[in-house]
Image (spheres, rainbow, N blue to C red):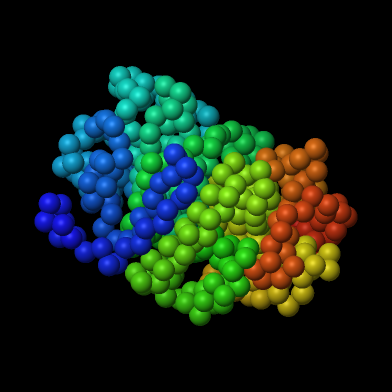
Length: 388
């Protein structure tokens, strides 16, 4: 370390992942204690010294003061904006309120927004940054496992529509992502499990060895072991960074990151975004259904589909419909939701299917009868309530 730039903070327990996007490239720093260093790490990347930290009421009680103090110590003039926690805040009404509030503060194009929270806060803040004054900088400080490994990296921003999830938004990259794994200590087990589903996704897409590693280390991860968490988060971010670098705006293989999501978004919409079904829970069962659909089409083995379902059941995530909220699930209604998915092309639904664990691919040729049969087998023909 140079004496011209003294810094006593140990770096050996941190990993930096570079998202290579030319002039929009940025780092994802993974480690513990990063919230308290946010100002120091942000300062070299920003032209201005004005920032607005956006968070939710739950996260504010844990980390807002530390974030604000860090920014002020680095010379930032900063303020905060707190929104309600939960998916219900990811809508146009909340976005409109956020935009008007921030504009009322007299911001400039050098003002940075800082997203301190989970996926809802990150998506909302990123979208606001992308359209305020036609684009101002923002930084992601994701505080949930799901956001650290998925939504906080890659520049997808947006809000939900009454017709479906994430239908209104932009591609807009952050200047920096700080994945502070210490923030996961205050995450409820249910939220940690939901984030774990997105970690598993990277193994199921194209990394069977990583999936096998997760099968051996799932307990440590969910128990909050810091080394296991750092390893899993960094590995997931590297996987996502490679895909985003090759296909930033999802015109090709980036859509593989949607494994299980076509099903999941339909399930979330039917559940009403009321908190009874978390995004990661829906994604877990969506990946189960994607493997069962692949098996029904003769693409992968029944054994692989069963292995995926068994793993999710073992960690407390939905591997069967009876783990979903007890509402009347209807195959026809779910298919209608899927027809409004943002990945529809020329009226044809896009699915991520698989030829086996770690062998995912895109398909727009799924027979509707096969899809309906898989859903009927999952929920009962004609639509049955899923018991708790």
